[in-house]
Image (cartoon, rainbow, N blue to C red; front, side, top):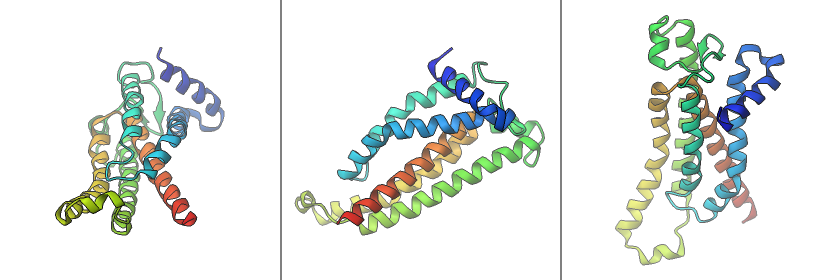
Length: 202
């Protein structure tokens, strides 16, 4: 049993009296929030030196957690746990085969996709606003106007990558989709809070 499986199992046992069969799903969300809190110092440091690719290191550090979760829900360790009607180890294709788009499992996945789309839209709006309002750093004075414009455009396009999470969530087990929506929402909220604090301190 992996450390991840053990931690999620313990959190699930704590939440089970309140959340019954959805306790493991809630444990995944809680575990994800704890991972994000552990990465907060890195995210804060990345924002201080903000570039279009700021925050890449925290994303890379989360990949092992994502792969551990994927393995736990495809290898059988946690396959019998559910979120409402959908098994946490099920993929969207499984849900479609078990009752169609509007079947009990399909509706769980539609709810997940709606949450991911809302977070991605919020991220895209905030990212474009931040790119438009970002001051030009002193080092950029040595960069040509064309290069500055290309960097500004890249900063406006990067937030749209959040919508790629929808595709990933459709291909991975439901548990991994829960991790994706939670970590993306935490990331967007954290950046909004840190940028607000930075503007308030100026």
